[in-house]
Amino acid sequence: MKRKICIILAVIVLISALCSCTAHQPDEEKASATTTETTTTTTTETTTTTTTENLKTTFPETYTNTIYRGLKKGDPDEYQYELATYTSYYNAYEETRTANLTNAARKINKLVVPQGKVFSFNQNVGKRTVTAGFQTAKIIRGDEFVDGLGGGVCQVSSTIFECVLRANVEIVERSAHSLKISYVPLGGDATVQWNSQDFQWKNTTGTDVMLRMYAESGKLVCTLYGREKVKVGDVDISIKKNGDNYILTRTVNGSQNYQTYSTYKEQATTTKKSKKETKKKKSDDD
Image 1 (cartoon, rainbow, N blue to C red):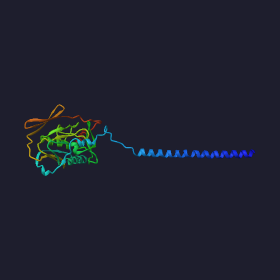
Image 2 (cartoon, rainbow, N blue to C red; image 1 turned 90 degrees about the vertical axis):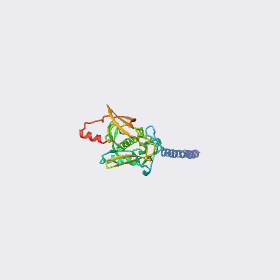
Image 3 (cartoon, rainbow, N blue to C red; image 1 turned 90 degrees about the horizontal axis):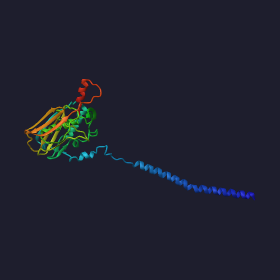
């Protein structure tokens, strides 16, 4: 009798164990499925993450394209009447600086500015980047000369400034350098920086005009031509120093119609330099 009871109890225990294994199997499968689903979701979220431009810290390049309607290049044969010209000089042995001003002059050459429209240097030359063909040369940053992309383009903007002054057009925006430069008279320069300073002038000549510009053998030449012959007038440009100010005045037929002031800081020095080193540094302007 006791033997039968033991056999019955053993059978009951075995059946209970089998039922227990069967009951837990779905939970394990469910746990496995949950783990797989979690992994898949995590992978999807990681690969679809995107970033956007932070306009608070990055200058929106599209803004430059909407300052004024973009200017186009024209046919020089249609612009035969010279209104004004100006030549500045550079050291052709400074290879990267020469490459920069040559590149900028090439972008300006043959641009047509219709009557009543505004020329923006930054809009037409574009951002100074490696992909745009610009190289590293000396630029002015604050009160010192440092290496930077596009060093030399300020000579292009300054040469255009000197030229269009003599064509008696309206100067819309112009800023002086913070330090003294040598390629145009002090007070007659026009500095540019991609996202903060532009040089702009308005065509008030009475006819459409074309800018012709080239850099060759140490000479940077800018000439303004008109589609029609117009009388610019008797233009006189004078620059006088008054204390720390350089005062540029333009008079046309004896009447003043433009004046601008320029003040330059002394170059910062962090270590003692010989006179020879200091002189060389000042020649490497932007």
